[in-house]
Image 1 (cartoon, rainbow, N blue to C red):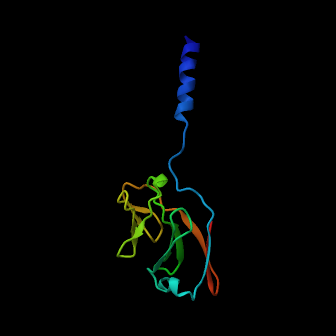
Image 2 (cartoon, one colour):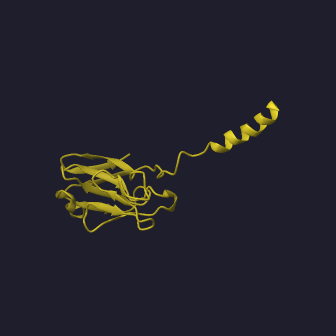
Image 3 (cartoon, helix red, strand yellow):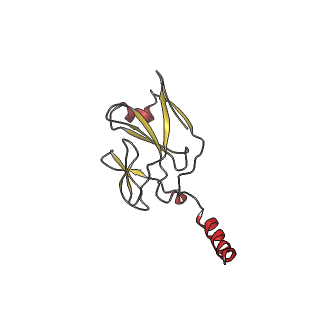
Length: 137
């Protein structure tokens, strides 16, 4: 009887082990731009943002917070990231919306502010020198 119980429990244990949840894939990001480049001029003001294509999984959002810090997020939604659905910055400039699920994310810190998403947007490191901005992971 013990052997039969063991034979039933072992497959259940192995089948119950799986991924800890969907996450936005980690891909190398290495973006550099001059702070004087007119394409990133919106970052001069708090609440300003720039969408950069060709980096990360679905592009990047660079954002200037109210306390004048720079932050960068992957546009790939954290809700069902395997769909590679790119979030779009809302008219307010304070949130971004996943057009596939309706999830909303704060651009101040990347956290979800409207369900169904429960995970933050993937963030990247931002370094600013006297004349350039660098985004990397």
